[in-house]
Image: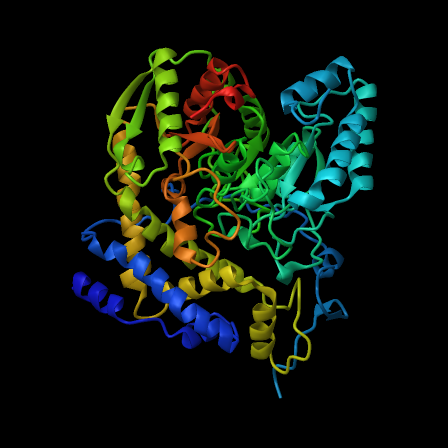
Length: 103
Length: 487
């Protein structure tokens, strides 16, 4: 089952425009054309992992198996509002400004 | 004193003896930066007045009889590590003008120990690259030969240290970004084990791989900075509470009783002959120092690059989602909706390599491809990790090349992303397995470019790597001894 899925996944190319939209990138025509070829090379290169037999192997999500790290829930000062807003491209009344969201 | 060659340890000893002041050290470095940075582009931002005022404050503390391990020691910092009040733009247009709101934990610890922060060093944008050619502020160059790259992504840090514009520098290493530029420029590059140094305040690239480390002129400086930065941090839940190694174990003079593994997969036929010769000569020195060298195998090495270039971009695509033009950094003008704002800001702000990695990451995480790529890569990562666990049953440290060749020419690999990626082939494995690893300069090649060897140690056994490196460096005549060796 797993082998099958991997083989299928490996046979389709990347729809660069679609993935760019998922990643919130607007590509110029020139970049889209350049990336189409380059991404095909890169995906072809990483597809090498399909050669491995990985059935039954536990995935590694972090270098060391550290789970459920807790700390005491003690109040401590964080960034104050002025500092947090200092790098904002646009702000007003202590808030970040964005384009209109609700019509 | 010659700031062009003095180590951090020697500079501190001179400060203790009163041979020079921190202000003199910093002034001297600033003069060298002024004279040399135009050609190398190693530094992006240097605030001379601020650096001098930090140095004078350290000198006043010293005059009052106060002491701290790094009091008055100037350090250069990679542009992705936050130093409160200084720029921290990750060499990206999207963070142009960003001022760090607070210190990274590593910086806060070094500051507490008396360090002076000299300036911001050049890097591949968001640490994505292996040559510092993908910097939005223009490429850095290799001080040993300006037609060659300094390596990357911490290329500015390596170039600054090698060119005498910094005594030591901080870098970050996700797949080799400290060790590879250290090898190309001829300095000591040390990546501690994952979890040793807090990542709080390091702008995240791939959170399961990133680690802060050092680029220095000698092994003892790497040890010094490691002990100053390491230790658990409540602000980074991936830091470990395990005890640090014994400092004396990091300062060995011989290697009696040590077993050094030499993995056959790290010596492929494509390895440059001069790199091979330099690493095998290092193995010979290990034996002369009393170590036993043993042939070992890390059978899944050939899959490491594929695993790395799935895992790292996947994490990057998630981490870089925060750059949306709302809270910090650049914002595209004239956006009519939030979606329009995100897309235009990110398209204007990110360079091509960052876009490629984000695209690749979004692709391998997207519906229908997650199992085929991302989950498979995580499973393959387990196999790579298990290779090392098995190998370290038979040896204390591993000796290998850092890079397939000495520094390559500017522009040689920028048009072919896969060729650029392959320069990480011997370094990314230590990140995937969470190990500590060090790049040690060994010799000069026929073209006057540095050659280096890599020492890889088990997780949290920094002493295995630092101790062996210290003994090798000493056997070759000290921190500059390698320059007189040929391969």
